[in-house]
Length: 475
Ligand SMILES: Cc1cc2nc3c(=O)[nH]c(=O)nc-3n(C[C@H](O)[C@H](O)[C@H](O)COP(=O)(O)OP(=O)(O)OC[C@H]3O[C@@H](n4cnc5c(N)ncnc54)[C@H](O)[C@@H]3O)c2cc1C
Image 1: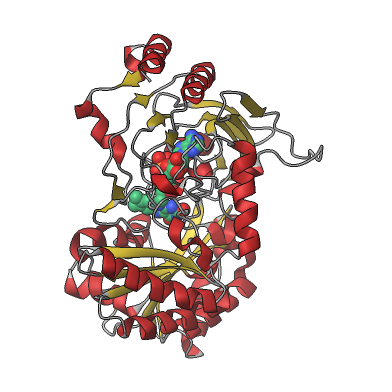
Image 2: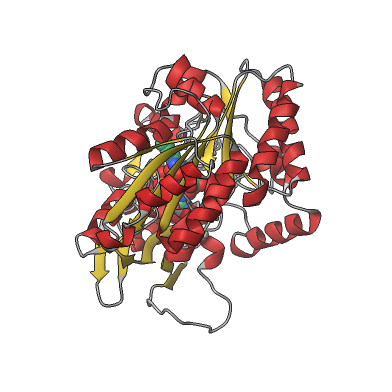
C-alpha cells in the first residue's frame, strides 16, 4: 500500500494527489449520502496517460477505485467504501473540439454539463441532455449514470447522444472508441456497456457526443387539471398536435403543490384551486412553428380537459413557472429525513401506480408525509416519503413501495442509477436470469472487482458498508 502511494505521488505530483484527511472529507459524499469512510487518497490525473498509469498502480496493489465527477449523484454511487481511492476527473476538464460539420463535440470527462451545452450553443447547435445539476454534474458523470432529465420526452436519455468514449479499464488499459463513426457495425458495440455503468466497469476519460440543431424558440404553459388521467389525455393531445416539438411534460401531484406552495411557501401558489399541475413545453427552430399554441390550449379548456392555465409571455415568466417544478431541490431541507424514490413504470400506468403507492403507504406506520413529482411524459415519478430517520423505517417504506413497483413491472431507478442506495432492492425489478447476466457483465470487464466494487452489485458481500443518510436531494 505505502509503495503504491509513493508511486502515485511520483506519477501525479502534489496537485494530482490528495491525502490530507481535512481535504478528503468532501470526496466521501455525493448529493444524497455522506459515507462513513474517508477515501485512502484522491487521485486527480490530468491526462489519459496519467489516469491509465494511476489505475495500473492501484490494480497491481489490489486497491479498489471509485471514479468521481461532480458528486451530484443521487444514489451514493460516487461514495467510496473503506480502503478505496477516489479517482476524480476534476482536472480532466474542458471542451476539446466542436465539429460543426459532423455536429459532434469532444470533451474531457470532467467538463461540467453546462459548459458542454454552452459550447454547443455558441455554434448554433445544442446538446439537449439537461438536468437541474447542470452547473456541477460532469459530462463523464452523466454518461456513467445515463442521465435523463427534463427533455427525455423529446431527445431521449444520454445514451442516445454518445458517439464515442475513451475509457481506462480496471487494469489500466485504454479502450478508445473516439473515431466519430455514425455507422459502425464491426462486432459488439463496445461503448454501450459503459453508458449507465456508474463507474463499475472503468473510468471514462473522454466523451464524444452527437449534437443537434439548436431550438431557441420555446412556448411554456402551466396547466391545472383534474387528475393524472386528464394529464395523460392532454399528453396524447399535445403529441398529436405538436409532434416532436413537445419537449417537456412534467407532472406535479396535489401533495407536491400543497407542500411547496402552502406548507413551506417556497413558491407562490399558481392557481386558486389546487389540482394536478403539468408544465408543458414546446421548442422549435422558428417562432412560427409555435403558432397555434394558445388557441389549442383554449380548445382543451373548452373541452373541459384543462381547468386553468398560465402561458409564459417572456423568458422571465418561463423561469418563474419552471421554479415551481425546480422547487423540489429545496424540499430536502424542509422534509427532514426521507427516502427519495426514482421510479418508472409504463407511461399509461403511472397514475394508477401512484394511487397504489399512496394506498399502500397509508398502511405503513413508519411513512410520514408523501409528495410526488416527476417526468410524466417518461413514466418517471419521484416519490418522497418522510420518516423518523431509523433504518427500520427505511426498510419498511422501501419494501412497501418496491412491492407495488414489482406488480407494475417498473424499475427501481428511472434515471438516478442504482449506486449503493438501491443496490439491495435491484431484484425488485431484475429476475434471476437478469441478475446473472449483470454479474457476468461486471466479471468480464472487472474480474478482480476493483472498480467501484459496492455500486450496482456487490460481488464481495462481506465488504458491505452502511451509508449514513443525510437529507436527500431530489431531481
Ligand atoms: C439538483 C439536482 C438535480 C438533478 N436532476 C437530475 C435529473 O433530472 N436527471 C438525472 O438523471 N439526474 C439528475 N440528478 C442526478 C445527477 O446530477 C446525475 O446523476 C449526474 O449524471 C451525475 O454526474 P456527476 O458528474 O455529478 O457524477 P458523480 O455524482 O460524481 O458520480 C455519479 C456516478 O457516476 C460515476 N462516475 C462519475 N464520473 C465518472 C467517470 N468519468 N467515469 C466513470 N464513472 C464515473 C461515479 O462512480 C458514480 O457512480 C440531479 C442531481 C441534483 C443534485
